[in-house]
Image 1 (cartoon, rainbow, N blue to C red):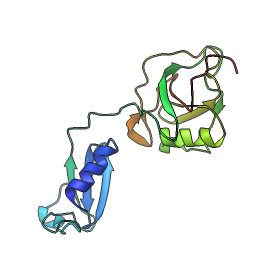
Image 2 (spheres, rainbow, N blue to C red):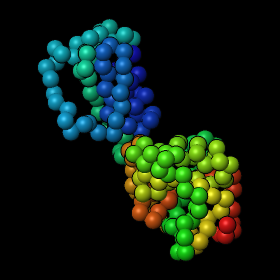
Image 3 (cartoon, rainbow, N blue to C red):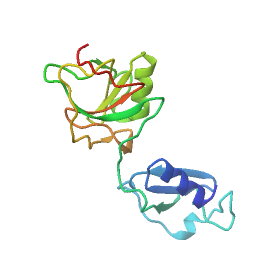
Image 4 (cartoon, one colour):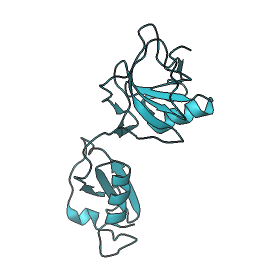
Amino acid sequence: MTIESCSAFCETNGLAYAGVEYSMECFCGSSRASAALQVAATDCNMPCSGNPSQPCGGPNRLNIFHSTAITGPQTNPGVNGFVHVGCYSEGSTGRALTYGVSGGVIPGSYMTVDMCTTACANLSFLLAGVEYGAECFCGHTISNGGAPATGCNMPCNGNSSEFCGAGDRLNVYTRGTLPSTTTE
């Protein structure tokens, strides 16, 4: 563990804050906790396991670093064999992706693009969509009049570095060519 290795890991995962603790632990986040308090530097002086000349926090103490290279949430380009195909509106007569897997399958407070695409793949669906920061839907086609849209700008509840749609907006991912039909 070094300050550089922790910072690079966090940046690679789209998170602007890196914290080293207890000589060998690395934590990442998109913001500092509002309850975080600055303590004396002497509380954060355990040597890093990978570079003893660097301080790597202490027991229940983090040395925190901020990267200006991370500008905020971004659209996840794809994961688990799925690729992002765009932002879509919900259908005018029903859901654009008709099978919901939110709630008991994936608690909304933990929603990420990775979790949603994994769930849809496990159910053998071709499409996955994240909506409203906390919801996941699957399907084989864009249905009920769902159409390309803008406004997918709500961070995922489980990973604030990526977008999970918005109200009536889905970031849609596919495991192949986006089907041209809009009925299911």
